[in-house]
Image (cartoon, rainbow, N blue to C red; front, side, top):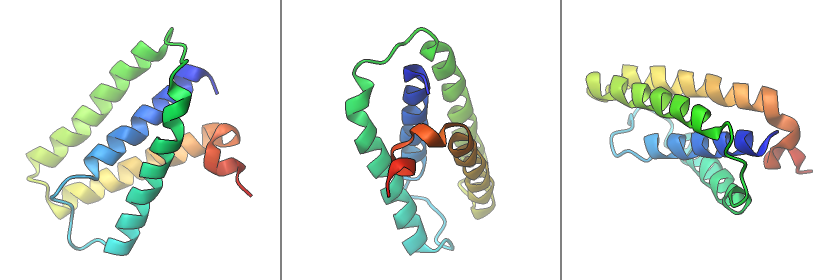
Length: 116
């Protein structure tokens, strides 16, 4: 995993944390599972902060632009649909796909994958 790739994962987790830090999350969701998810994302962000100091930014800016567009679109859908349960379900499934992609392509270098 390149250092810019690590920064992209870090920024992705920060964006997910921001989305799920909203006050208008669905009350139908299992609150314990939601809190567990939020705690995992928060821990991953905290564990990566110290690794972000010496990141090669040669290709990061291009990736960051894509991330901004991606999460801007997600936030836009939520707002357009008045943060409805259905909109949140679409977002949840989209972010699940994103996290699965990260795991499949970077699991050898992620902190939680290396724990025994």
